[in-house]
Length: 445
Image (cartoon, rainbow, N blue to C red; front, side, top):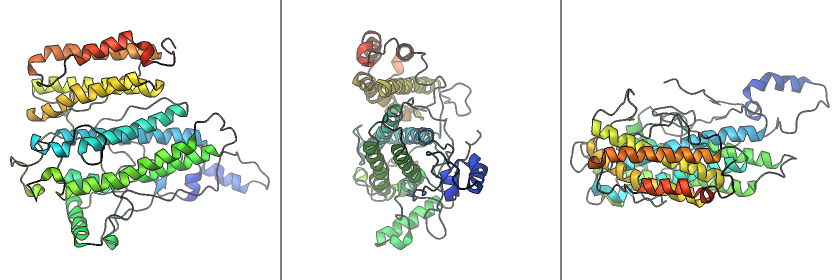
């Protein structure tokens, strides 16, 4: 699959202040006679945001970041902010799917590592839920700015420009944990000069051994720093009276950035070193062979797909059917979340949670026993395909009916805890409670 357009470069302050395509115009403006006007929204002398990398390309012999910054595409801060919020939404969405796949790969003995679904930095599902909350915050800011929410992402595997490793679905292992630790590390945490204890030195040595030379720059922290700077730039514009409370949004964005750089880093570091309480009784858990019954995760494929004809199509017909049903539940949750972000009503959010913690959870924990996992395939139709909000709700109801039909066909293969009545409850809500789902009276818009 072709890689995405690279928009991260080793940039000068000039390149950050103006879009790359405007470089010649910038030079011409500098050469213009004194007094020549420059648009107020073109911050030609704006300082670049100081990078706050969560890890990156390492100069030998450590693991510390090389400094790079985000090349600007648009002069107007609202356009650039919308662009980067789309990038942030795709990253948070992909992280959520990766962490859920890893969590569901765990065997029942390690349920304490998997978690129960509460948002916390103490277990894998909790961290995935926090990534989902980050996705929600990014989408709410998009909506506050008058843009549509962005629930889409690319297919696995793909290599985003901001992330130090290709996104891929894989079972939990020491290698995958090394990548997550590296990605979530705050600035300076992987610098050997800051290693204060023998444990710190051992951790850095083992991380370097596991990762080898596969690391590359990580700019997720820089992405959020740049987004915060753009919010400030938007605040300073003269026509900002129609904007939301941007000061509040800067605080929320700083919280998102800090949550990953501190709590998630410590969590993944403890898992990588085998120190999580959920590994009790196995002091050197990662020294076990993946074939050992006590090894934490099932052996699952990388980046499986339930799409027929996909190169990574799941082969077993029962597992394929259940995985397709898992896709339908995943897509239903995303469509419901899209409704929620656009209209800010709790009814759609409650239904999305019911599908994630009900059918999706049931299939997610069952499929690894069949040798695969929920593939989290992307939906090419998008998650709000209707011409109006009402028609998008009706589309979602049709999607749930399809899930109900597939579940009936597969009923004898469903896990015992699959809540098969959830489909009827959701369809009834979507058909009968449009006013509750679209609280602003937009059922016909």
